[in-house]
Image (cartoon, rainbow, N blue to C red; front, side, top):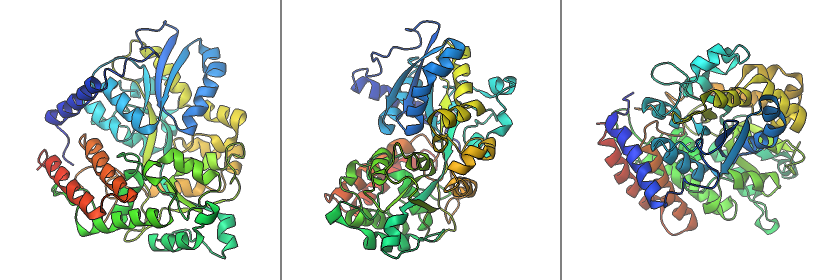
Length: 454
């Protein structure tokens, strides 16, 4: 794998600086930075997923009560979070002491020197038990020096979720390992627009980490790839076009209403309210779906492995993790929060206070030995672990790849490339552009990226 060099590092920093100027320095919000708050307060930026909303609820009465350290949270949707954290970290803004970042960013940012390494603190923290962290998650957050640069908050792959009652009503049976052809057939049979029920929910919201998280796994299993091993771009190759056309047409014919604006959160709401028969997305969604306080389909959901075409498995590999920007002046307090948020006791706290199905799983082996969790997660725990274990970021498709990543390409330029191509494909879902035209434009963008590596 060719590693991004200094030229690429400067590119992402420059892009972030430009974004900051264009946004009118939007990073300077009312939340205040690490230098603006007292010694007993740290600032945290995090994505607005259910697991993060839970930690926001639990922090004051538990972490703050135990340590005296207050946490000032800023919560943003996924795309906005990515923009804001990149602006702050790349430009050394110093606004946040801790932030949730993903498996895509961490190795790149570690190479650029933007993050504190956490292995030293984790190894010295006798109660942390770093060895208990699931190995693929740690590997995805490890820098070239072999040190961990973020601590996994939860880990995930992807799988297919389906409404068992709807399937039973139609006399349909979901196989444990479905193909995409079978899924499309099910969607056609279960689609009931007159009742407000979509055959399937799939992300159509632009964003390299929104639409292209599921779509790139479809591309992989259809035999496509963003780049071949020698960095030859393949965005408008027949396999990529076949996969994208399949995905877009499936949404247009049997997907949710408002699909061009539907990301993870919107599909979670749609499926949990019984407004879709199937949903292909993150394994981490299962905890919310099985919570009767948050979901109308709790106890009615079935789970199957990510649909395939030419490959045996196709699930992605991801972790949302807590990282500490190099700019923080509160390293000790920041580590105390990260240690608490990603430790064994936190998972027990969530189970006891909020319900065991809501435990942020997929990061610690010990989680799967907790009797209460095993009982509450029996519908999805095994298939979640199986999906994580079979996700291969070094070989996710049918051909060798030049960079790590299942649902992304592990280079700095992919954030911009994937987002721009997703915007074109979202327009195709809306009916204002063809998929082939969108990918022909995407090929030109990919060719520009490839020049940095060929």
